[in-house]
Amino acid sequence: MVSDNELGLFLRTRREAITPAQVGLPAGPRRRAPGLRRSEVAALARVSVEYVTRLEQGRDRRPSPQVLSALAGALRLSPAERAHLLRLTKASDPGYNCLGGNTRPARTVRPTVRAVLDRLEPSPAVLLNRLGDVLAHTTAYGRLMGPVGLLDAPQPNVARFVLTDERARSAYPDWEKIADEEVAALKQGPFRADPHIAALADDLTITAGEVFSRRVETVPGLPCASGVLRLAHPLAGPLRLAYEVLELPAGDDQRLVVLLPADTVTAAALARLETPALQLAG
Image 1: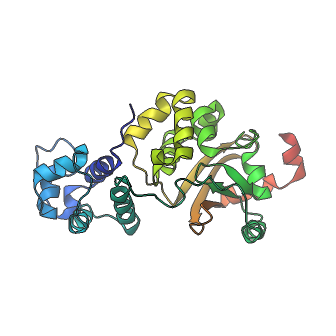
Image 2: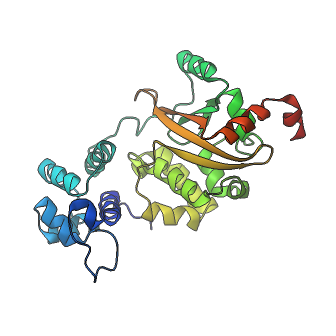
Image 3: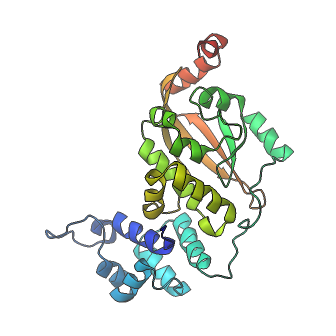
C-alpha cells in the first residue's frame, strides 16, 4: 500500500535535513540523529509537539496559513520549498484540482518552443511533459543520450528508462540519486490524484518493483531544478554536465532541461561527439 501522506513525509524529511547549528541550537552529546527533534521544531514554530506529530503522521493535513508560515520559518524552507508545502496542503482538499491534473499530458510542441530548441544547438536539451515523456530534443541531445539507450523506445520516457532499464545503472554513476530525482519529479504536484501519473505509477510499481515503491514512500516530491549530472558515456567517456530545468508556462505543462559541460574535459568530449567518425564508432 502506497502512502498518501506526502505532507507528513515532506515535513519529516525537511526536519531531518536541518542541523541544530543551522537554527542556533546546541547539538548535544546524546543526539542520535543530525536533524532536529520534533520538540525543537515545535518550539521554533511555537506550536505543540503533539501537533507537529499529527502533521507528520498524516492525522492533520490542513494546517492554517499562519502555522504553515511558522513551520516554513522553523525548517528554513527556500521559496520553492514553501510553494511546495502550500501545494501539498491544498492537494489534501478533496475539492482541489491542480491545474492539469485531469488533462491529458501534453504531447505537442508549440512552434516557438521548437524554435527555442533549435537556437540551443549545439547544447544538449530536451523537452519533457509531466510524465517524463520525451517530446522533442536537440540534435546534440540525441548524440549524447542515443548511445546510452534512453531514446530507443518508440515513446521514450526518462523515468521509465532510469527505473527499469539496466543500462541506466551503467550510464549514471550516481544512479541512486538520479532514481530519487525521477520519482520526485513524478510526485511533484497531485501525483496519484492525477489519473495519468497514477497509471504510470501503477505500471512502474510492477515493472520497477521495490526500486520505485520504496522511493514513493521516502522521497519528497521536490526535484532539484539544477545540479551536476555524471554520465558514463559509451563513446565519449566520463562526463560531468551541469543541468537547468526550466518550467514552461502552466498551460504548456512541459519542462525544458538544458545540459552544459561542467568542466573543460566534458566540453572537449562533447565536441568530439559532433565528429562523424566518433558517431560511426558507436
